[in-house]
Length: 404
Image (spheres, rainbow, N blue to C red):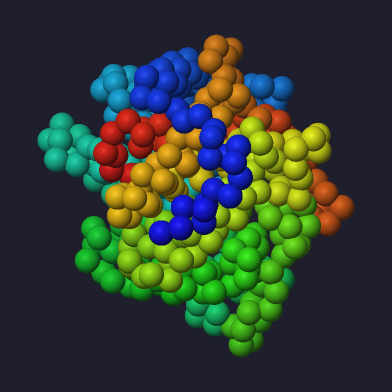
């Protein structure tokens, strides 16, 4: 294996790594933040991104709410404090209500919502007699979410439609994020014995891999298909700087998504794609290792960062390390530790106010001339950044059974 595949810059090779003691201390900070926010939010949810450093209180009605419940489960898994479990199970009950009432579930993000909430509950509590009812509730809710996602599968093209009314020609597309929704379907096949969930997930992954990864291993955010024939049409961005740029968080979804895909199928093609997507991500990092929100921007640009991209990438690196040979696993673990050291030193909020997040310097959506998005959560905390930072710390400290 060519070590230079991932690390071509001298300063990156020499970057410090987060050590075991620092990881323990950082995770303890996260747990204290979750405990403080558990009291602050009560049975409401944090919004997707903070505003002036504090998450607004919202209902369970956004694509990000599962990450808050995931933080509760990670805290419970670490401490065994029943208060975390109590609040996490209250969230699971609210997710069941959300599915029954169909509150903002007409999109593809069922995995982001229900894997770190309901599947996590099932994985952590199954076998506990006292929690049999809760485990049953978590299972049926996650399966309902999986069935909901299955309803978005497009036979013409072989993919799960991301947004909009199913079949709408203007929304006949997938996005790279959806690779993280596929584990919900693999789990559904696991617990029901029904292979159809896995088969549809496999088709989506094959379609996505063929379309969203460019020749240089950078990635498109979203890709359109012809609704009449299913033929690939074009890739564009929804949240990146421009259609041909590398949206940092999308590239990180590519790292984690190719990792998960390789873990399910052990297809050498997916490992090759992982290697390339990862090398592209590392090559475009600035000198302090905190990604700019889009890799069009470099040291000294003054553009906002997206710390969540580094946290997602670290999780993907650590997951692939579990599948790799020893030499490659050590390199991947080292790279993840470098990213986590940078995040911990530069972005971890160690003493926040009630309602504040864990990881500073995230970017939800930055407007550009080409993307036209509604700008929000720029240089703020965001829920997925907080969650994936905690997940990466957990991975560094134990042989962790992922919620995905």
